Length: 199
Image (cartoon, rainbow, N blue to C red):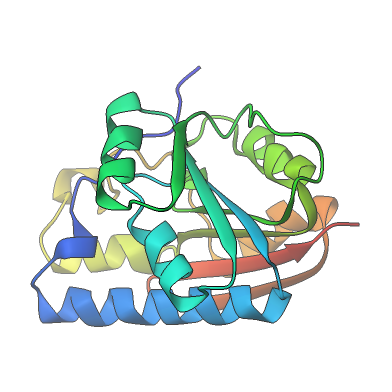
């Protein structure tokens, strides 16, 4: 079974490109607004990579307790080094080593598109959450169109390496509906941000 891809092929979090900066700023603004709306005080970030987004969430919501898990040992260590004060550990979204309903909110940003079993990962997020699950995925087909426009991954028809699942807003809602109630999906330009409430 293939696990989620570690790290970034393109380091968008530290990009100097002004367009990328605008895209990331918008993505994080939508993400933080959505998180604030839940009133969550405890959050787990599954598949957190180097912890860039985890830190941005913490900085925007200093009153919350947030921790991250990442499958790669080196990446988890890098997250700890880059973000002192936030707990990061090695782990997989397929088997989150936490009790049922341990957090107000379980999130996973830019992970499900990498998983051979996205529903298994989604169910683990649901299991460890008391009420809310938030996931983000690339907004297709806009994501691939944008890649082609910047002459990237042409032979792959704009598909980013490692992306094996692709969701439009309609397809993402259809994927989530059997498992949650009150699903709200927002577009953050190149991303979809879905907030789901447990049944």
